[in-house]
Length: 187
Image (tube, rainbow, N blue to C red):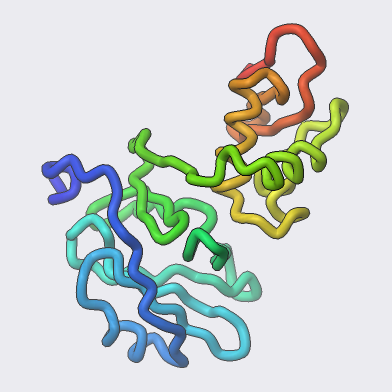
């Protein structure tokens, strides 16, 4: 059992060190679980981090879509975010997200978004939806230049308030403006 699981840690700070040119330079910057460095040569290539689960591993996360499956980094007023989640299928097998300079394990319900009630953000997300086409949080986030985790939190709040419908399509949550009546959540 990992140290994180045994201590029931709900989240941990993600500490961005800096952008460097090589993986070796990035690895030298990592001291504690949750430390992150980005390897960039013209474009972001790799996120290197000390595993937040206290197992001691150094993780290499591809950021370059030209080479294979790639994650995307975001920097905004909330801090550094990475999308999608990281799910290790070896080692400690942890599953976590990095959102706004915090690391949350997938089983945590402790994820709070400080700006979930920001009227301008909510209006922008709401405006990207219509009543006929279901869209993913990623699609809406890409149109608005926002972090998908943030858009997903806002959309789920709008579902709870009955303004938006949510349905599952092939295990992906998709959203549209509510058609009236009962909100359709996860059908």
